[in-house]
Image (tube, rainbow, N blue to C red; front, side):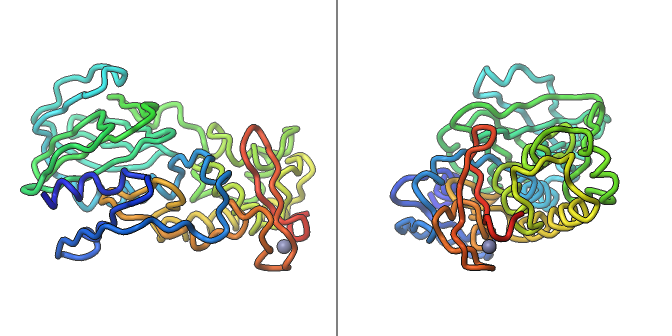
Length: 311
Ligand SMILES: [Zn+2]
C-alpha cells in the first residue's frame, strides 16, 4: 500500500496533495496534507505551462544515475500507442545516463540509446523493488529493470520515446549549463533581430532553457527581456552567460521548481520556487530595488521583469 502511495504521490495536483519523503530518508512516511500556495504566485501563473526545463531534466538524470547504470532491461511496456513501437530490448543493459538539452538519453550496452523527451507534462517515476506498487494515472510507458522500474507519466501525452543509433547526431545547440565564452554567445545573437528572451529559449541555439529560467536569468543579468540581441554589448553577453550558469546550477541543486505539478524521480518537490525573484510575481516588489514587477506577453508566454533593474 505504501509503495502504491509512493508511486502515485507526485502526480496529483488537486486541493490535497501527498508529501512523500521516502527518497530523503530510509524510513517510508506518507503524510496527507493540504497543499499551500506559495506567496506571490497568482492564479494566472499557475495556469502557465510548467514544462520540465534543464534543471528538472538534469535532476532526473542525476537521480537515474543512482539507480540504473548496470541494470538490465527485463521488459518494455508501451501503454499508449501514441508513443509508437519499440524494438525488443529484453536483456540489454543500461550503460549510461546523459542529458542533451531537455532530453534524457539512456545509453544501452549495444551502442544504441533510448531517448526520452518529456515536453509539456511528462514526468518520470521510479518504483523500487520489491515494493513496486500500482502504476499511477496517465502512465504511458514502463521500463522494467532488474532493480526497479521507470514509468513515464504524462497527462497531456506530448512526451516522446525513441530508440536511436546516435543520440548526439544533429544536436548543435550549446548546453545552457556550459554556455562557453561571452563572445561565442554574442556571435550567435548579433545578427538576429529578435528579443533576448526568445533567443535564450530557442532550443536550436541553446539547449535547456524554458520560460521560468529565461525570466530569472534576465533578471539576474539586468536585461529587459524585450531587448534585441543585435543591440547587446559584450558586457551584456558576459552577464547573460554568467547569470545562466548561476541560475541553472542553483536550480539543479534545488532539484527544479515545483510551482504546480513538478516532482522529481522519487516524487519529491523541487525547491527552486523559493529562489524565484520575478517569475510569477506580477505586482509584487522587486527584491532588489523595491519597484513593482511587471508582466508582459512575449511569444505567447507570460514574461516577468523589473523595469528598474532590467534596462
Ligand atoms: Zn528592481
